[in-house]
Amino acid sequence: MARVGAFDHIHLIVSRPVQAEIDKHKNRGNDRVGRRARTASSLLREVIGEGTEKLIRNAGPDVRVMVRTELRPDPNLEERLDYSKPDDRLVGIA
Image 1: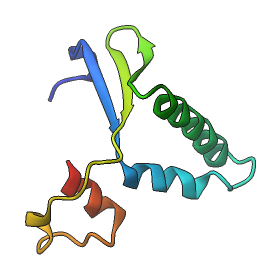
Image 2 (image 1 turned 45 degrees about the horizontal axis):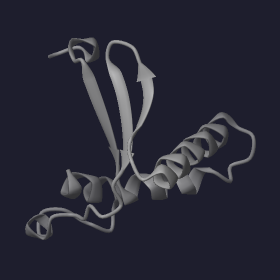
Image 3 (image 1 turned 90 degrees about the vertical axis):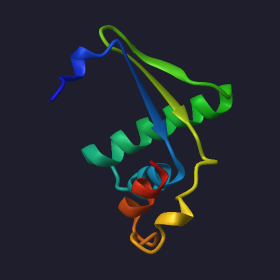
Image 4 (image 1 turned 120 degrees about the vertical axis):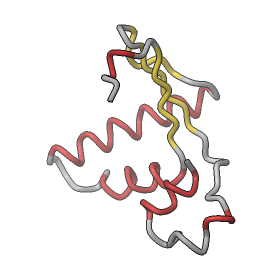
């Protein structure tokens, strides 16, 4: 199994199900999850506003995040996955 450090570049692709999960946690008050969700949401708004990817770490490896709301679950997997569940939607998109 390769370590994360074994790669030069990492691209994080955020799809709609991921955005929805972040949105659900934003209103949790001042607990750690709520704060992190609001921080992540702000970053995603910035990426969407710029219409491109954003470099969020410039060190081995560099990490870029992009938002791809147009990605949809594969209809060919619909019989094997339950698309009413966020995890299955992510698998269907990947």
